[in-house]
Length: 327
Image 1: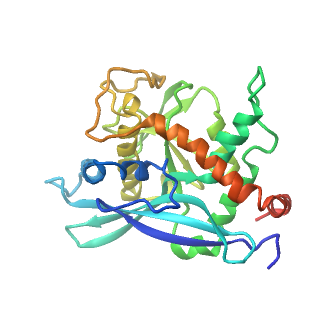
Image 2: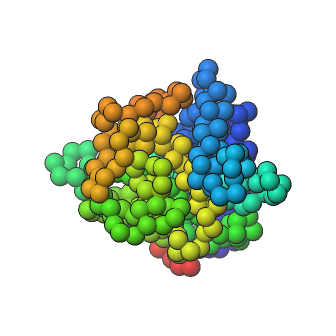
Image 3: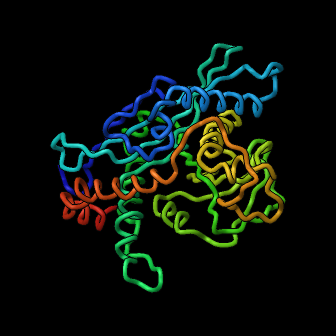
């Protein structure tokens, strides 16, 4: 194996249903893993999955008079990377795959892979590297080559034979809008994605995902109260079917209603000029238990895990590979 180009990926699939238990090497800050902990774990999962199905049926309303034609099955896709070809792997990224069940035709329809996005190396970049870089600085700045390695590893994975053998289309990742930006509604309107919004400036998250090869557009789907950020390759509006897009919207908006209720479960709909506010008290809570503070502490812990088990042990190999990387 050459050091330059022969990292190998192993893909594992786990069904995300009400019986899901996070495995030991799952990032516990991941949206779905956080739901599946504690006394209310099964009820949390059951409620979240029901919310996703209801949201999907309300959006895919054609030929669906009772609002029960479809249900969503979710798979957690865990991707391990082997750097040296030794069989020693590190958990590199974790995403979600949606699958659509049409109960009228008994068809199983492929959804979209991506949706949620988790990465130990991203935790390292944001919660260790960036924090340390700014520890004694009076002015916030970004380290040189910030996100370069992570971006190249992601692009390498999406172009790998492992990805292409498992998935038919490139990933779409759907995130919350940023609460330190202002979004303006454009004239552009899509039947499923809704009104497009444009931010007043670029964010560090946008720049980080750009290094992964992803561009971003912001849309507020019909019946939603705030825009979502869609990160994608290619042409978001034409590369995916309506049902595929609805599967991502219904899944990720449900998670955001749980984790960001101030924005996504607000009682007022975003207007033409919209500034998200995590201190907005005029919102409703779901019946699902979640500890946001614990999650931010865990990100630091997991970033340090990545530093200890991936960044430091493989530093020379990773630097050489990154310097020579090209697709």
